[in-house]
Image 1 (cartoon, rainbow, N blue to C red):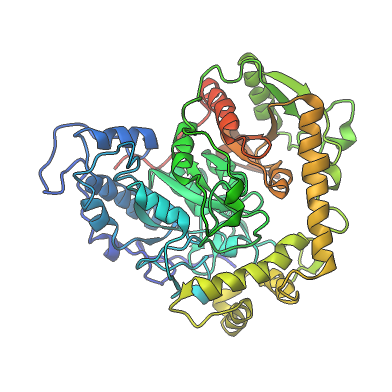
Image 2 (image 1 turned 30 degrees about the vertical axis):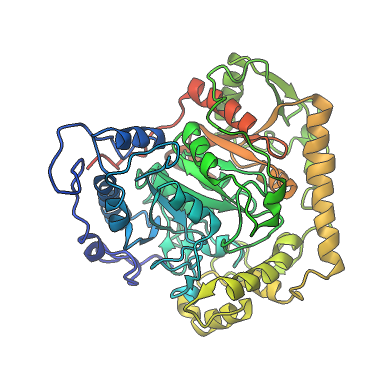
Length: 565
């Protein structure tokens, strides 16, 4: 079914973010809170890095208020109007008042993000006037009793929470084959490199990636200085590669999960989405901390400063595993199965690594072929009315579905306020009662999760979790990296997301180039990224490697059609 056109400046008729709302926020780029214009130049907000924004705020060229207005103007011009990217589900009604309170505060060691506008994914609790909905109509009016820990850390660092980013509904665990970036509350996020191409169902041909699609699109389109997303398996890496931005999917336990709408406590984590590797390191400095509310953070290991070791020569002598052995093509599940049009980009990326002094070790990963194999997945009948595979059996991970019911019910009990929705069963019932609006793609995964006990007592759950760790961690990345004495492993785009996520290990993705085809359809150029993965707590090393690659490749460029205002 084709998406109906909407009046300019509205979002699905819900009034969460409208031209009328934004009219309250006058655009005065480079103006002081008093309204007096300044002669000093302000940063080009559409492309400025977070580090450049910090530098501008530390000088006399721009204030927090004028910077927030500049980003709000771009949200109005490109998210609501123009290409209608739909990446921002709700603007924080207090954004400008918070920014005004920071106009006389400069970024410092104590307040590194003073005045910096940040968007956060709408599955991260904010104890303010903004709702926390996971993109669900069932949670449209739901608020949070408190800020999630990551929000508290951002505020304590001086950040301005600019608003909530749209996402794939419930982080893409509600329906089989739901397109990335779609939510019943926020609509369909569009990839800024190709926002207009739709298939016969009204689904974008070049998807924005999911589930942190709104966060990544907003960064790519210059709608914020940086954004925060979340990942269970690929939900940071996928939108980062699709939109040409940088992300860090941290070790589980590096960033607190307290106050984040969950899928799986075994794999969930928040992470930054930025325009540069340095920016991601700056945000990790703020977010990586122990939290009594999240026991996974007890084992946390981190350096004092993630930016300290960033070095253009960081790849020299590094041993980089490339899980692609020409002598073992049947087990070449990462590079060997790349589409033809993606192979030149990855070949060039590997060439850059070598030119930077890295030692490439080409060797297949023995367990890659059976990750997600028998005993770790559940058969679920695909009833999605718009799926090309309707009637077939999907095989989602057992760990996700069993942990989802327990973890989501705990979040609704402990964090959600202002809503009558208290359990997953309530969400399912609401959706069924409002199927014409809430169930465009169905809710087969929610139904499968609800059928579990919800207490993780089932033998099949415990067995599946043990198998995941055996294949991805012990006999997977641990064995592979030890056998070949590696500093990191590289994967094309988000292809290695599952093996690192199941192990709870970190990944860093950096733009690598552009492709112009999806299946048999030619498209405008859109990005493709390169992922560096490693063992637990190796974020600093991965950032160093990714930074050296980024500086040598310079592969990122702005989406077309989103010029400065």
